[in-house]
Length: 377
Image 1 (tube, rainbow, N blue to C red):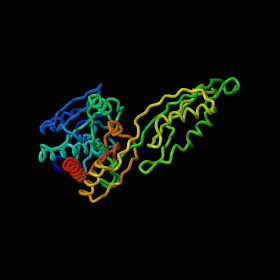
Image 2: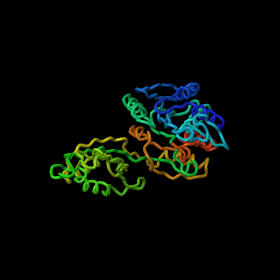
Image 3: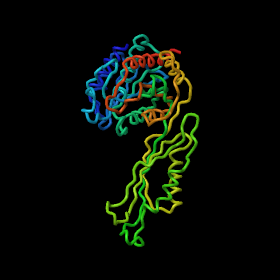
Image 4: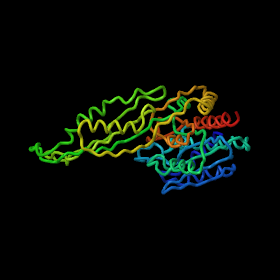
């Protein structure tokens, strides 16, 4: 299994699939799955290519989800090994996407191959949902596939997302949920004028100070057993013309909340509006909801994954929900149980991104055993 996984991972890494350009990665995957009898369905939306592949036709539907797109490499001169050469040095596979997440994809594909070859008439359905739009806008990828599947009455029961979840050792962390993410783009109005004549102007920066203090100090919740407390950070703030003698006419503030299941996006919007009204501000605000929080409670999927990890690593993984968002947030909207398990995340999006070849082989065994635990039980 190891060599098959490494060979496939190298083939994928050598395709420079900067988001959302798939560069033939999904075609390579589809050809392998088709040989196993998977039904291949292409779901392109705008410049994004999506693959939905299924083997079997009954419930439950167990899906592997991932993305073929990668982030830009930056300055290639800073890389010790060319980012798309997929070189192996001391059993480490180097290249953009090695850890995030072409290595996981290779492990998933080979795991499914091994399982289906020995269980061609397995119960349930094995599926793959693969997109080329996860690292960028995430507007025409997994979310569009989920919408299409739901519109025609299809569902996913269990989903494994191959994002790099491990912290120190493979399998030490399984993500069983993610925080929600919502961004506010706030424009506070004032009256522009000369700094020497403040009585003829209205400085929105001065007016907003009380509001900003309250906004950044407000305690939204205390978190819960699975989530840390909701946090807010100001990401960008801008006012003025660049001149030292002009009172600005508008203040722009961009802030983001990573929020847990103790609050909702509607509660957040309402509370911010109350604060703005309290401080007497004239404003307009644009909200961008990147994703709602989701949580998979310990149950059949979590148990299947935890047992599989323990079997092949000797580790009992921690269940965590920290970090950023993932496409799991869209799949959870189907009512699916969703977890994330992948290789170490130490080098993702960095120069010299790499992954242990041995870890990819073990990950393949874990994924295969997960199918055994779910479908053969």
